[in-house]
Image 1 (tube, rainbow, N blue to C red):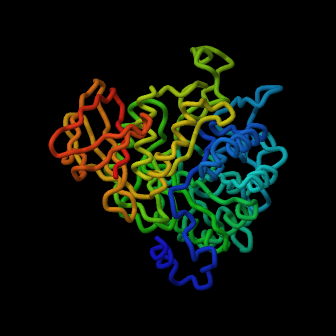
Image 2: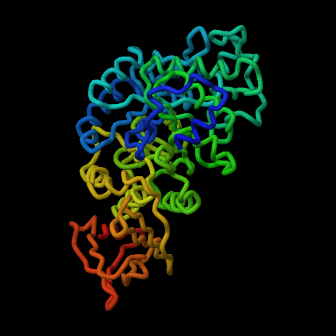
Image 3: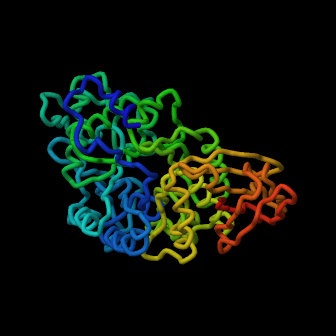
Length: 459
């Protein structure tokens, strides 16, 4: 990845910095993202509470990216006397004199510096979400592009075909226009000056030219800012070199807490196996464990005609996650074996013990941080076997035996079926590291629940 990134910057002398001498993300990043628990309505109080909880519950296990998702610059209309929004997306956004977004007074009256500083004090990294392009408000006001004679209308791409349909804060940027790269240069420097360590850029994957513009702008700051690309529903495979200028690439649509999202992740795993490197990770979206959509109405309020119920960003209503325990085991095992970044989505101050157990399991984390995207070994009658070898080891690693059906399955484990040598020792990760001995002479019969998994460490 380092060499691909450097090669992509030929013609830009002087951009190499000491920070680029080592990878920004040598292992899959671990962290928390506010979208699944707060939608686009995270506010200052909740942010500080989640920072504290993250430092207490997850930081000791390596989770360090604290991500504020979309909406942090939105001036939302609020229900009087509360922080609850009365609109899905903000009717106004807050900008500086150069058309760059700045923190909302509605949700961050104290700005973001206090939160960024607290993250850094606690050993966490401070990160924010951005939408591709230039604010439409900047276009309407025709604000200047910092450091140039150009203005917003000189670079904005107003063609409806090239603009986001689900979030209309921005127009795209026409990268063929003078001033376009300078827009991104100024914007990314602005974010870097805010103390940002990672940017999750949304609506950008279908536009490789703007991916490259952002990556080049990050390079110019001289800062080690991780770039995460979203969304994942339309990922043109021929643009992989552009995507490799970032460190994370979303390859799924938004993932929530229903079984069919597991299917989406397995499909993405099959498609993208082998595309990871030591500084570029295939991202299957967030982990919807714990309480979700804290700012949304509860289910009973969403009945037709309820004046207090506003359908907000995210999926559904305020709730505890709805996966069964077996589906949760499958979800996190899939993430471990596929080396997908682990970004927790649920509310951290109220996270339940079972979710926390899965998220902090030492074998799960060792497998994930091993940084090898496992490959499928076999698939028979709804049972899939995936194997992730340990780096530098010929006879050690992890295997997942997934029951992709809605029926209890009895599985006969043999060396050929698991893709292992006879006499391997197997340790059942989710059942107290129970040991099994794999031999050529006899099979090990094990029951796997519907949507369940057998997660094995082998050596």
